[in-house]
Each structure stands twice: as C-alpha cells, then as structure tokens.
Image (cartoon, rainbow, N blue to C red; front, side, top):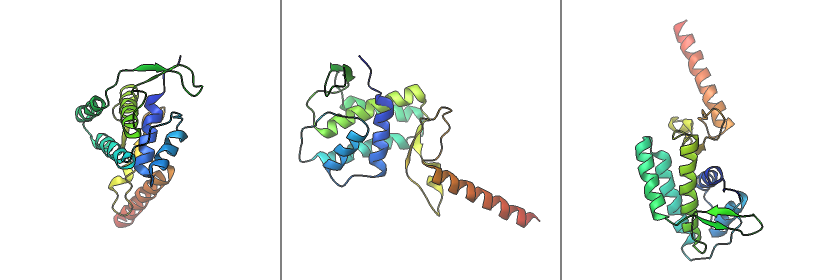
Length: 183
C-alpha cells in the first residue's frame, strides 16, 4: 500500500486551475488526469461553476498571509469536505488512501483532495510555501499566478523564470538610474 502524494499534486492541480481556468467540465477532468487522478467522476450539470467555487475558496487560503487565518480557512474547507479516509484499489494503482467518499461529484472530490493536499503541503513543507508570485505588486506588469513552493530550500518567490528575470531587470535598471542620479 502507498499513501497518495496529495500534498504536491493536489496543490499543483489547484494552482493550475486557478491560473488557467478551463472552459468546461471536460477541461477540468483533463487537468485532473494530467496530475495522475484516474478515477471517473459522476457528471452533474453544475460541475463547472461549482468547481470554480472550490478554486475561489482555495485562493482565499492562498491569499491569507497570516498562518492562523490560513489554517482557519483551510480547516473550514476540510470540514465541508469531511469524509473518513478509506482504502481503495482502482485502475491498477494498487492499494492507497482516499480522503473522500467513492461516488461524489467532481467539485466535491476536488474540494476534498485540494483541501487535504493543501493541508499536507503546508504542514510538511511550511505555512509560507503557498503564495502569489512576488511580481504581483509590480504596476507595469503584475502577475497574479500562485506559487506552490516545492523547492528544496523553500525560497521560491516567483511563479516562473520569466517573472524572476523581469524582476531582476527592473532591479538592475532601478540601481543604474539611482547611480546616474548620484553621479
């Protein structure tokens, strides 16, 4: 038996959905497949908008800067997704744990997986390792992407090399302009 790596893949899935919202339910399901979720989900007419609510609720957790507030919001999410852990063996994956009932609609499954995954990510890696890109406050080119810090040193500030490079160029130009004014 193995434990699902809920922490990493679930948080990366949530960040992916938040950063590039799919046009329809099929796009959401495709994204779940990309991170390794193999289960089929019963279809319900409100899956797309209800899943958007799950992601919006998760973004409130991302944007909470105080660890206690973040924990409060996350605990509230996990309480709404409450289901006892269960052993399952589906799709040839071997025995593993699920933190949800077997036959739930897509939004309910994602609420459970993402909230438990986020809790595992934050408690094992650190409460500071989920935030918006450091380029978010830059007026000329703001970035609102979510950073899921899975680096070894836990210091990832930018969502991409592109944002990090742009910030470095801005700092360099600001220093050069300051030096010119001082000279």
